[in-house]
Length: 477
Ligand SMILES: Cc1ncc(COP(=O)(O)O)c(C=O)c1O
Image 1: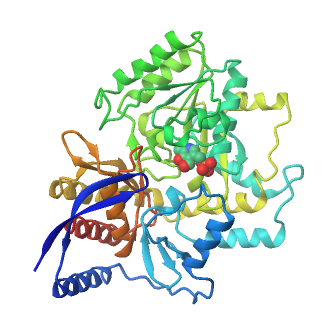
Image 2: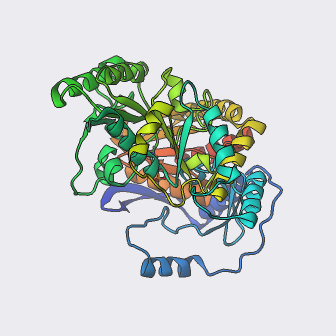
Image 3: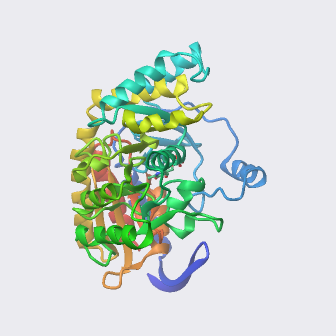
């Protein structure tokens, strides 16, 4: 016997009234068997982590709550205690394996604990861990050269940082110094970091504290799913032109944008937008900054950098996350002429470009090339997007499937017409997928978009498993 009962579901401050199916004991047992059968379909993987001997998840959570800032939050009703990682898989404290389709927020680019990267880091750590750029060391120079070779045109001068926020802060500073202007333009729904300048450039209220943030104009988001002009990039680009004309002196310092908004819910800028905006910004004397923190290092598959998909060449490129496969590393790459502006004062970063991180970064770059991971992102990403699009035909709750390569988004809505965000359902499905062995991320301003950004070594079998688990979970909603 199956019964349908009303239940109120809570997620943070929000709640909805929905219905839950209550099953008989025999049906429950059937579902358990189905779950086990599905979990057993996870692609085989020849690695067993060492036994875990540390404290329990509950003990760690209690300590976190007591000693760490309450601002830190976690995914899932029962948060995962992850203790090991190998390539595209993660292991919890019980040794249970999970398929990682989030990659530590698009950060684990070549695979968890990739042996080449671990070896480079360990070898460098054994010889010299820290010295600062006040002394010479081969690691920073070699990585600087290798990175510059991956960028087009005159983008040949690198400054290393420890994070994406630092990289974007520095890029914005350089743009202001170079142009002697202070107006920056960014796109609504973008995320660029959480220090003074980058919080100002970030354009989502949930990431903006109520403190003075000045000098940034937020342009219409060329959002092909929810935006007022659909996929007409040129119409959105006109907004930037108007901001320059009506909101500034006519001269600007620069424009900063992600090629695919990551935190904002995997939103690809409408075609034609970026090149038109770059033209307007250049005419106003500004510099164009490409924030490649999520979309760089081959993730989009078709290109090594996200901006290349739009046929533009920026003046400054910022990067982090995938550059280091999980080690704290970021970089700003620009032209020799623009780079020179930093010499007017001392600009120093204690850890930026440290030997351990730069040795690791070089190893990451080599693995991307050696294992043809950009090509893998293209073929597996295209295959996975196809499967997800098929799923959209099956479930009304899927409003949109988008993205490129292994940077994919699945937006859930309670109604396709009104596009009402299915926030609670998103959290629920994500939780249940975790119980079935698949870790995915979520984002978007309304928290209703699955973010699929796995390590680039993801396989076709992994893609099949992910979609089977999503399919099964949605079928039980
Ligand atoms: C596009 C983008 N830029 C910048 C940042 C900030 O990077 P970090 O968290 O390393 O400071 C992020 C972080 O999510 C990001 O997604």
